[in-house]
Image 1 (tube, rainbow over the protein chains, first blue to last red):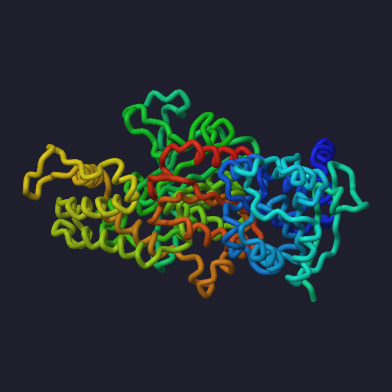
Image 2 (cartoon, each protein chain N blue to C red):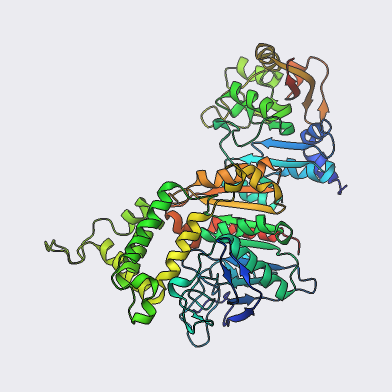
Length: 203
Length: 375
């Protein structure tokens, strides 16, 4: 197995959290893969065979420079280019909140893959709540945009997402909640900044 | 060409092959000659060879210039050379002229050794599968077990794809640009109008115009004019020519009035002076016949089951001759087979011709991909 870039593990604790859920040598689809660093990390540390999906030209180029497979596609139009059940994991990392068709993408993830992994900023994080209480839309490390330029249109809390899963026959297998590189177990919907879910189709 | 990063002066080479070539059509070419050019150095392990496949009217002169004709710049000189996206410091690049061509490889205008006359109408139909066999033979002659990459746009992209299917172990990477897995009815229709223009030219003489001392210039000119329209986008034509008049006022006759007419006629005339009409017919048929899924119940994914290469597939947003949807169909077949593939749809205004043009993002993509290839 290839070298483990420990600096990246420190820099991106969310990568390590996702990687901990993924079996070595598995097939991975990373939706909204950005510059491909997560896929590259999973390739290097776990030997996965993966593809990224991206819409942004600059990110496509960055993926090629990072040596990962990337397919230019608009996630909003679904994943019709990908066969059903053709991946072990379909990842949607910090993109769910910016998707227009939330229900469709979760369905598509569970069509193309056996398991889905999503991460998203927890809108219920106490600092977000405080800012709203003080009369402003939250701006923070995980929500770095102003209300007028944010791409985030479907923000939710842990409770919201879990309710969504319950209503849409999505079975949650595992949850991790982080604040920076600390794992949060106490009142996660209040103290957690970033949520990680691993899920599958309900039987 | 005063281009500091050009490969500079190049010279064509040729191989003679007297092992008969059994063609897809069933015909046999007893022997043939093939002309090619190389740029850069083949490394000690012979693992850095890149084959460039040409499109309908292309040839082996891909980069650099000729000593006796410094104006004759290779058709993909902006892509290939020292420090260019396909970098001749790293790669040994081979340009080849397909058989059936008219730039030195055996084709309809060549002399048939059996008869001592031009092949003319007797030259057999050639397909991308036949070309793939000639690429393998050239690789064998040069001692190359596997191409580091096979690259092509349009018909060249199809030829590269075909090689990856015909000889999977010979292709490490394939870069398929502005291509399709098969032609649509509309594509074939355009090709047939072009062919009819040539065939119905009174100077065509059933393809044996060489012995009649004529050239079907008018037909070939029309064929090229039609082709040219399909290589450009409506937007780029509007931008470049609009409804601009040559003289500034209407002249109410059939002479050249609009700038677009002037441009197309010029392109047609230029082409008719330097290209062989029979070759044009053969190349358009090779396009029409290309359909790797045909033997697999029209299932492209099954057709690609044998492929081993890693692929980069590129399309251009304004290309309506081989639109991005056609490239996505190729990508789907590659994904279904879990082959390594990357795909980008490049924003462009120049239609199908974009693959020949210098565009920063396009060239960055090719450069990034080529940089990652192990040789």
